[in-house]
Length: 135
Image (cartoon, rainbow, N blue to C red; front, side):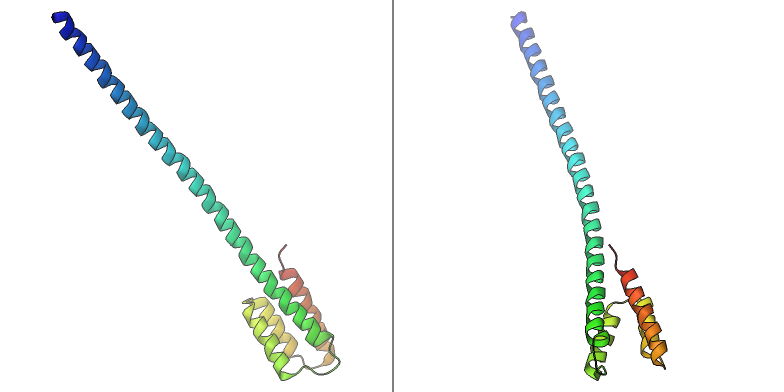
């Protein structure tokens, strides 16, 4: 009888230890999963931030190149004086770029007193526009 009682205690002890070991393993796996998924989330957040910066650069480049094309088509290729509507469109595109340097150079161009000065400022404006495009 004592032997049977002792065997029951040993079996209960082993079952309790096995349960604790399984529970410990489950907790360890849950913690490990949190660390892995947290790391993956952090890496994705970094990739997302980089992608957003690239998107901002692309949008900025698209605006600059759009203005550049409009300027060439409406001002440089034109045989006649630029209409008020076209000047207003160009002015709005320049302001939409949100770039102080380009806006300042645009102001220099439109306030040119002579044709020679205007040609110099156009060259400076075009150079600035190309330098502002990020690759």
